[in-house]
Length: 191
Length: 191
Image (cartoon, rainbow over all chains, first blue to last red; front, side, top):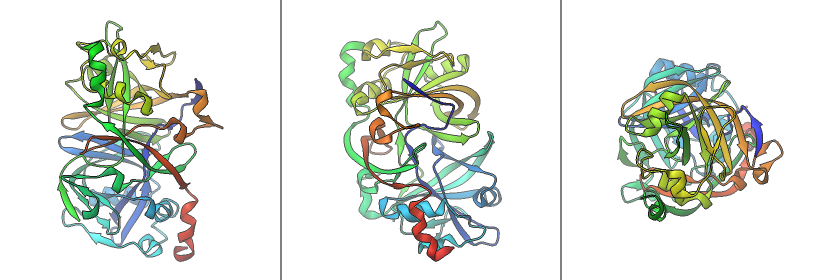
């Protein structure tokens, strides 16, 4: 195997657009790829941010944020939200996206995106360049056309994926199996 | 938008097979979907585990783990590793996978998988049902055929994706753009 060194190159990574309010109540978005679910009960996820970002300070103040999940239709707008700072630019205006005030947490979400998670900060953890923000998921909202039964259909939501290293974006591919089921084929050996 | 409630339904989620040693040095694997990168410097990722798992106790003891990234070829074996406990079963034997002792951390990795991250525990954070383990990435190893220049080619690695909620597995789809570049199209409006 080829050694690539001590680098944050795990795959896959998400493309999560983080919604927050500035102290003067202007809505902001920024794009983060360092994040993931981190607890089932209470349901929590983590996003990791540099102190240099406006979003870091917004979350420290409001104790809330939203995670907005883009599909490929919103790839350019999401990428843009990770390239410029909300300190200098109204990124909602620049992208034409619409901020909606959450009824549940003190943060705006993106009206046009397929899926939104509204989060309340419960803990932050200093690591180094990034601070880990752990948010309790207070609600998950999905556009009606992407819902399948009680769940968001991942093929329909089609969340954009990020490849650390090459910095390329990918779409979701085909469904290949069912968890807690496909593995039964190995049970004849081990069980 | 349809409200799905306060649930850990963020998309996408990874399928990461965690390699650890028991105190008696038996190698173990278990599959986790709660995880993500959480710092660039030092390079770190988080995986979140229940105290009920053998892996939780193995990491607490050894302060190390590996993250092994499966492609669809290894979907069944990875799913199996999340279905049974290593306390009762030799999951390497049951799956036919080969444990390799890491030279860098006190944990085994899976020889056959496309990509491996060797991690040293630097912090654990109690949340609720799950504990967040933050590991510093000491090296990333990728099979030669999946390397493109200095990076792992995500389309070639083809990491299996997990959809929380529906619990379906997906493959990677097509490349759709380049990060820190696609977004320039919005700059004429905002900059």
